[in-house]
Image (cartoon, rainbow, N blue to C red; front, side, top):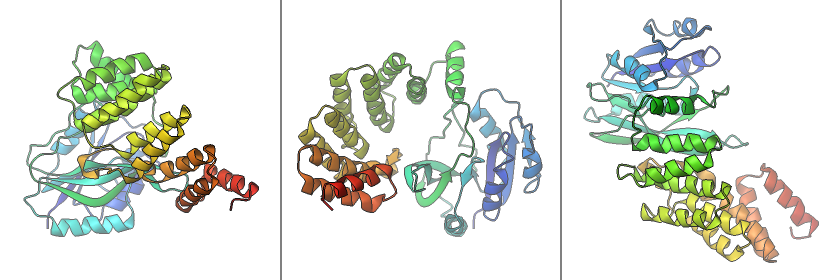
Length: 358
């Protein structure tokens, strides 16, 4: 059986820290908490679970804070969690089994990270993240923000799921401020951070700057293919905001040079066609989304709705606009079976009943 150190960085997490620590404490053998400046009862709560609590003066560098925690790990492996993460009892049990069954030659264990939920509390956004590492002094965090560790060696993809459930909003300007500070200090952004910096610019409605930075990332040979696929999607949205319809379509097609069509790209192409009343084209791409391969183990962002619900409900719209009520109703019923609680589905149900289609 392996042993595990849990390494966390926290700040003002008194509302939720006890939740994740009570869940994970039966699994891990050591808990290390690095506090980056709490002014509430965070450290008091942490002391109920561990005496290994350390202060780290916040310097706008998430990787540095995480590395401080990881360097103090003394067990065979170490893992990370955020204070607002959540693990169901089923997956806690699976983690306990993993401790007994893990091949000690494994260097990194990847686990699913679920970060988005719909109004029915169903997961809609997930991706694999590096989660458990052999404590051999070779794995370190990189990046002041959107920090990550590049997996290497022998890697295991586990089905274990960890949910990220925020209970309070974070500073929406924090990440952009960190990237702007990096640029001010003359730090050249590596490929991965070009991508995330461009996303922050997009979130802040700086569409021209975002488009320019996304394009620079696409031209960077060091860029990861999954991030380039996502860049094509985000860049198309920039062009949409800039009223450049053709450019937005062209960049979505460019994503096919990095991998087979992904469901979310197909949905976006369908959306563009639908917006421009190109219904047959929209139908083609929404049907492609239903059969496209999401390729989870590449580390791609998986938007579950793009694999079934969105194409189904949009096919309903397309066929209705073409006057084919029979096919529209067929796809409405399929969408309804997935999300009967969805407002659009409920509105469609009223529409079809009113027109004596049900």
